[in-house]
Length: 270
Image (cartoon, rainbow, N blue to C red; front, side, top):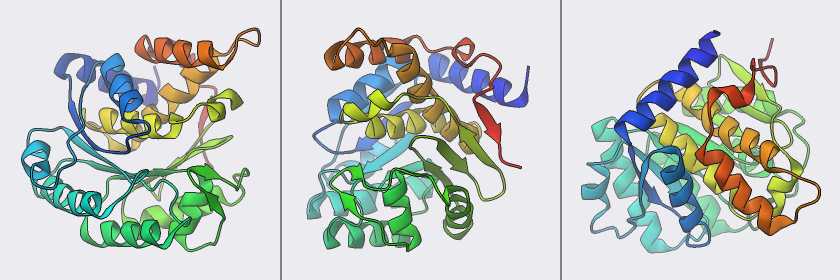
């Protein structure tokens, strides 16, 4: 068994044994799906976003997921309060910069969060990560207009070193890097792009895997792999989107290491 398989097995075992509580401050479009993927894999979700209670709530959580999809000023306050408290307690913070670059509010909010909170994992599509890195890339709502992964490794490694966190870029080929080690993940299916919230759900899965308190790098990789491999398994060309969406959740709920075989679709960059 490879080191990666051992790490994945350990994380999944801890999730199913400890049932980590994942505190989300997320968007109302995908909140239900994010809660369900955490539940389906064995964790416990909570969606508390009032600034008055977030510090108390994060104090009993195993990880914190910040998602700016439906951002407002109250949520920005909640992001900062919860993030700082999580940092004090050594709780991993996973940030999803949904639509950053589309508006000045989103861009300024991400700058403020990154200045005030130590992030453990930053997960976004190529457009979002490029915008944070400083390369202009058009973002349309939650969608990436940049459908290539060109330059992804260099951006991921450089940003990981700058922010001192794990960078996960999801797309046709997923890229995860801690600045020293970089991995490519070739699982997935294009139909995942036809369902709203698969990126947000991936971030929640990363939050759950990192909440197991093992390696954050392998936690981020595993979160991405669970969504991508499940999306692959769920596809049937004779079925439509609604069926695919239901089957995706089914495959996530019964995910096991056997789903990735010998790990042939996950490889470390040379």
